[in-house]
Image (cartoon, rainbow, N blue to C red):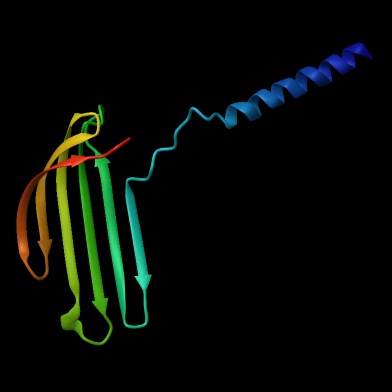
Amino acid sequence: MKRGHLLIVLSFALFAVSLLRAQDAARISTPKSVTVEEMIGDQRQFLQLLVNKTITETKKTGMLSITAYAADYSDLSNNEFQNTTLLYQRLFKGLSINSGVSFTSVDGMKNFVGLQYVSD
């Protein structure tokens, strides 16, 4: 009888360890690098595509691209398009330098350089 109890306790302990390992709080889920949003209204629709991808393994160099498109259902001359793509290099904790190009259907193409601060 004691061996039966011991076998049950050991099998339960092994099962419980695997469950506890599945709920490890130290593991941080990484966000997806591509996000797509679509909003549809009664007069126009809006589509946004966001891409945030690190290029190097040290995660210091990366690319960020934001594309937005708004379309009017009745007046096609009211459609809007915007794309901003930039490359960034992390300098210090939370501080990055970036450079890229922005294109809009109204203003055309514009280059830019800037600093970015992200608090962790």
